Image (tube, rainbow, N blue to C red; front, side, top):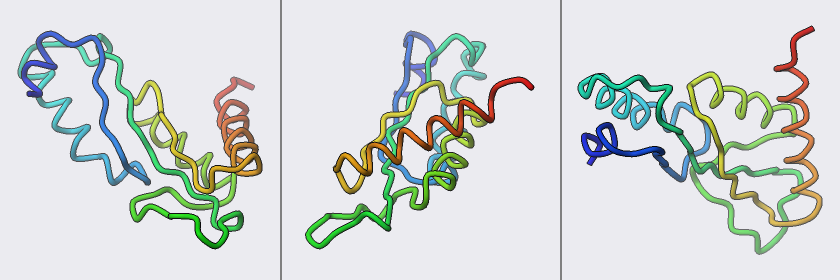
Length: 120
């Protein structure tokens, strides 16, 4: 399937991971297929679905995925930046818990990533 992706696709998606290290082998396989096809990796959009958990906000009854990036907004920001450094163009985040507070925390993490990425 990766050969077909490398030859014909505009985008590629993998899911559901936590830390970028959990997706490394899949990303490496994609890059190998692109190299075999003689294709520049910059010509394909890479998206990854990740599970994000804010442990301090998890309540009774919340189902917490085993493979997930866990932490504070600052720790989550570090994880999001690692995906960008790995060449991932877009992330799709499944957030636990699914509450306004957790979505605010994810927004804070995204803000931290943007601030860090800005040139001084």
